[in-house]
Length: 267
Image 1 (cartoon, rainbow, N blue to C red):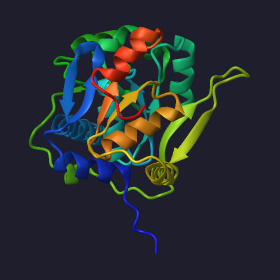
Image 2: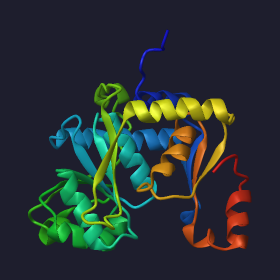
Image 3: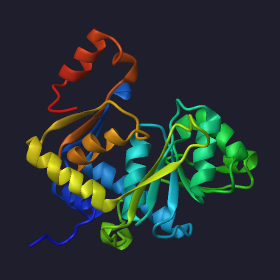
Image 4: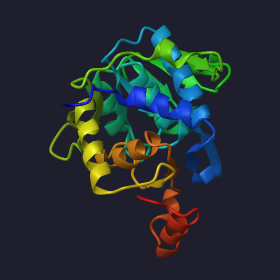
């Protein structure tokens, strides 16, 4: 008999509540650790702001956040809200990120304010968005520059209960959309359901055993499907996801440095 379906969002919340003091992320470029408690607070607060702004279940939400903390906490916020996250990439040409924004028909986005220089060309030309900006303070400058968009800032709130923002998900709900390169024309979106990632993770767990305190190196951007493996293996199991410094990954010394300090369990 098959076990009842449990959404990835529900599993993450349970893991974060159980292992609140453990490190969920290590961001190499800033040498910063983020605990499960911090990440849950951030994700739940962002989910609350999304839902207050009119976000609907199973609607797309752009991640204008590269591959940092805002991207990972943001995708959890979207997943908790019953939505579909749509990653973008700071290394893509502006035209490609714009094509993703317009092709997804997203009406909401989560923006890392530190990356505004990369995403300004997208905000200049894309359809109106409700943009959630974490830890930004006053959004007045954003409103002045892009008056057709709605900007909502927030600071993580200790008082929000995860159950108050967690939305029910079904196995066939779409979890995320990745876009092809567009080398043969306009980039095309590929939708991946919750069921697909759940099944993959079950098979991966049977094939390779990793301890609950494993450390997973994230070598890829969220715009690559393989990036889902370390993301979910780490954050659903109480492990730490190590966001490597990409500038060090392209030399033998850099690779060894990233993989051994601290020692990695998997990549």
